[in-house]
Image (cartoon, rainbow, N blue to C red; front, side, top):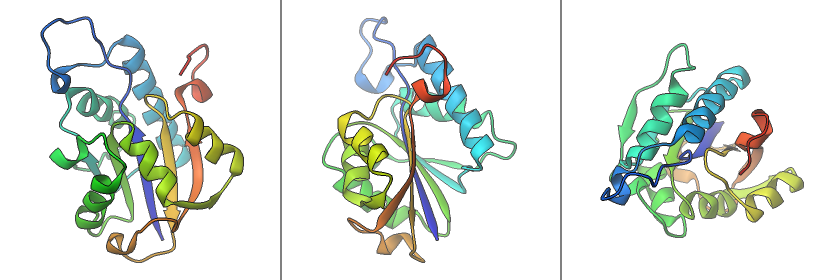
Amino acid sequence: MLTLMLLRHAKSSWSEKGLTDLERPLNGRGKRAAKAMGEHMQAQGWVPDAVLCSPARRARETWATAQSAFTKPPECSIENAAYDFGDGSALLTLIQRNGRKARRLLLVGHNPSLEELAQRLIDRGDEKLRQRIEKKYPTAALAVITFTLSSWEHVIDHTGVLEAFVRPRDILDGEED
C-alpha cells in the first residue's frame, strides 16, 4: 500500500514589499498552523518516508516547521515541478517519477494544483471529507490518500481512497481557513 499526503503551504505574508512570489515567507498564523499540522501528523502516524517540496519559500518554511514535530524527519527534495498552479497533471507526473521506494510520500505545494490533484486521484472515501476538499482546500490543509498499488508509477486518476482531510481549524482553537 502507498500513502500520499498532500500538504498545502501555510499562510504566507504579503507585508514585505518587493518580494517575488517565490520569496514570500510564512506569517505568524502560518507558522502556528504548520507546527500544529506537523504535530498532528506525528500523532496520527502520518510521517512520510520522503518529501517533495516546492521551491517557494512559504512551502519550504511550511515543511521546515512541520517536520520539527517528527522524531526522525525524512529527507526533503526541493522540486521545481512542485511550484505549479495548474490542474494537478504536473504534480501527478512528479509523484510518478520521484516517489521511488517511499511507501509514504508527502508533497508540499500550492493550490489550485493540490486540490485538483486530490480530486483527480480520489475514487472512494468519506463523502463529507470529499465535499470539504471540493469546497475549499485552505492553507496548511492536509489530505491523506491511500492506494492499493505497489509503485508510484501506477498511480493514476481515481485509484485512491481518501483517508483523511485535516484543516488547521480542525486542530487549532479559533483558527479560520
